[in-house]
Image (cartoon, rainbow, N blue to C red; front, top):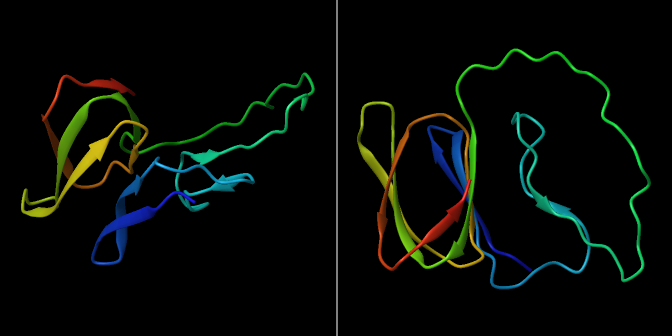
Length: 119
């Protein structure tokens, strides 16, 4: 199972770090329903299908920008900060890891190897 680490400031989620070394055997969502983004591993058996469908229009009012980054290749050090630019966490992400940023606080990156990120 993937390891999931929430990073919080005063009980407010600013990031989720999802380590991708192993994958779940059944569909698993990691983000809480309170976020405006849904992230999880969706698992299907060979021959499984998703019926053609569409998503109904939904009007949303968003404040801020959420980001989801997947380390496709390489290694990156992420630093997470609060709204006053105080460092709160430093983590190393490798191939297969996923970072969900909620739009709160701040963040910075330092590439430890040649790196490709999918955002």
